[in-house]
Each structure stands twice: as structure tokens, then as C-alpha cells.
Image 1: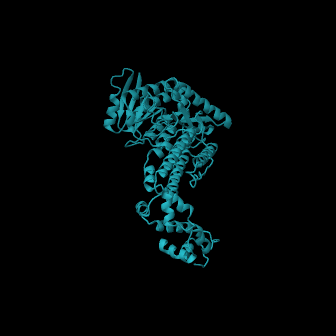
Image 2 (image 1 turned 60 degrees about the horizontal axis):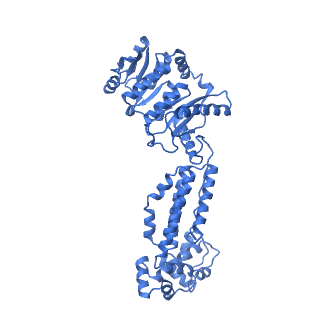
Image 3 (image 1 turned 30 degrees about the horizontal axis):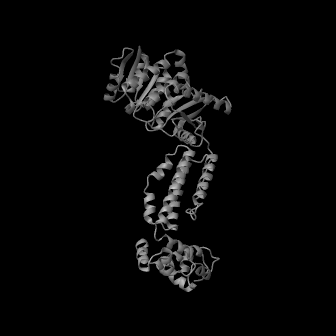
Length: 499
């Protein structure tokens, strides 16, 4: 017979939990309490097998209550049933000696019954009970001779939802708890909306290599036992070693970072956190010649080089994906403006949710490369097709290639094989400008770029941008930008005293 008491200052919660055991022949609810202090007085005279308690109560904090139970050896097993999924509660639960931590919003009759029987089986023998008391002793004799490691446990790499499993998350958690408890290799936690993780205690007297091997053996035990129930691959992200358990969340984040490295090595399943800082920036893709015959090949090679570096240096996966998405977006913007394919084309592409989604959901570096190349190829094909069917594309190319020369309306209409009235009307509809307004603005944009270099004289710039002389360029510059050339250069921090 498993003898238990229930301690919870919420009446409905206390009654509800007790009702789970009403028809169970092997479990007896000896008594229920609304105050932890009353439960302590009772336990000092009446030993039970398991105490089920909440964390927050009116008189005594539940974690302090557990500490008292352990210090005075008032019960063999302790199960916390709480609404708190915060790491601070979990880490104190480890220290104070809980055998199980169950979230109220996940609780069911079947799950709690299973948990009670599991904890009883793990604590019923005297030597195991003694082991628990020593392990969680507040004098920390054991702690002085051990170090800890936090390990995040994921299924099927990045899939944390477990939708692909024929087994639900609560059952997976129970399976893991059973294995961890059976082999006494750690403490498992499954906070709500966070990844499952375990804290392992390793012998400090061993050298680093031996401790790593000890941990790997523990994880292999978990992997081997879980393989009997599920076909999914287990991925382990392993934090740095630590002694002070006051900052569990810090080592949890380390373990999450470590497990992300499965992205670069999907054939492996154990990943240790690397504390080295890795600032990086993936260079922008070459956009100037993107629509040339070899343009796509050039950009594809740039992508491959970037991902090779990412793999070799284990760059942050989220940042790598983010920079790839950003670089493709910049490429789209530059190409659409360089080749004048139209704002609608750029808008249509930017509105495609598949572009960032295809990159962000890539689960391996090879898949990321494949998906990014697919997007780049699609962009090249569609942009090329847009230009091929664009009546004005020849005019835009002619202006870009002959900006420093004298450009006439006949030159543009001849390039597009259109009459002057038809060309001017369509050009105005497309750009909102006359052809010569567009040409002057394009020349001023080029002039602004050259003005950043103080080695260029105004005569050099006017000649390179197709203006008849520097005085005319200065007048057009003022009309287009609203600034004089000197004001623009002063704004850039270039002071040459010349207009």
C-alpha cells in the first residue's frame, strides 16, 4: 500500500487531486492539509511514502516545506504539483529534493497515478532513500565533489512540437522520467512551452575527458531505452559544466545553442556548447551583373562560400538564416532598381511569404543551400522574363550605358522601336517623369556618388555624368536635391571650399 498525503492551500485543487485516488486499491490518501505547518506536525509522528504538495502556500513556501521533509526525513518521496513553469522553481526543486515536478495544467488522473507509482518504486528501498537524502543534503557534501551539466533533449532535430510522433509529449516525458529514475543518472524537467531538459551530476574527481565520457554513457542509456518506444532520433544539446545551480536558465540557453548545431551536422546527435564568440557578416550578393548569363552562377558560388564558412565556424543558425533572407531581399531591391523591372515586380516578390519561410524552416545547412538556390534561380528567371516582356527595358539599359553621353529622344525611341508620342506617354506612366527628367535624376545620383570622393573635381564629375559643363550640373543638382554641391559635401564632412 502506498501511503500519501496531499498539501495544498486551494480547497478545489486539494479535493480534485484526492479524487484521483478514490478507487485505487494500492494507494491510500492518509490525510489532506491546507497548511504545510500542520502537515509537518503530522509527518513528525506519522511517516508516509509520498507527499504531494504545491509550491506556493499561505504559510510556508512549498520548496522550504520540501527542505524540511528532507532534513527531518519525514517521507521517502515528494511530488510537486504546481502551476509554475519558471526555471527558478525547477532549480530549487532539484536542490531541495523533489522526486517529480508536475505542472497543474498538464495533470491528468492517469498521469498522476503513474507518477505516484513511479516515485514509490524509485524510493521504496532503504538504500535508495538514503541515497536521495545524501544527494539533496543542504550541507552540500556531495555537491563539493561533483559538477553538473544541463542537457536539452529534442526529438527529430528542430521539431519541438512532436506532431510527427504517434506518441504525445506527456507520454514521452514520462518515458524519459522512467529511464532517468531507473538508472539514477539525473533529474528530468519538462516545463510548459519549453524544451525538455535534464540536469546530470558528474564526479568532480574525474578529469574532463572522463566526465565527458560519463555523460555520453548516460545519454546513450537514454537513447537506447527510448528507441524501444519511438523511431525518432534524439538530439542532445549539452551546456558547460557548472557547480552553482542558481542560474539554471543560463545553462538552459547554452544547451539550446548547442543543440542548434545539429543544423550543421545532422548525422550526429550530441552537441557540446562552445563559448567562443563568433561575430560574422555574410557579404551582400553581387547584384550589378545578376541578370547577365553568368550572374546566377556568381551569386550561387557566393552563397556556397558563405555556408562553408558558417559550417566550419558553427555560426549562430538563426543569424545565418536571417542574413541570407536579408541578402536575398537586398539583391531583389538592387536588381529591380538597376534593371528598372518595376516596383510592382519588387512588391510582388516581397509579399511572397514563401521566401523567408523557405529559409527559416530549413533544418540542415544543405537544405538551406538548396532552398536559397531555388529562390535565387526563381528570381533570375522571373526577373529575366519580366525584362524580356518589358517594352521600356531597352530604354532603361540605354540610359544606364550612355549616361555620360548626349542622349536624345530619337535614341530612346529607336531602342524601344516605338513612336515618340507613344514612348513618352508610357515612360511617364511608368516612372512619373519625362525621359529627360529621369535622365537628369540618374545623372545626379551618379554625381552624388562621385562627390563623396574629394579627389574628383566638379569638372571631372560633370564630364562623367553627361552634363555640358560644371555650372549646368550645379544648377541641376540644386533643383533635384534642394542643396548646393558645397552643402552636400559639407554634410558628408568634405570641405574643399569649391562650388
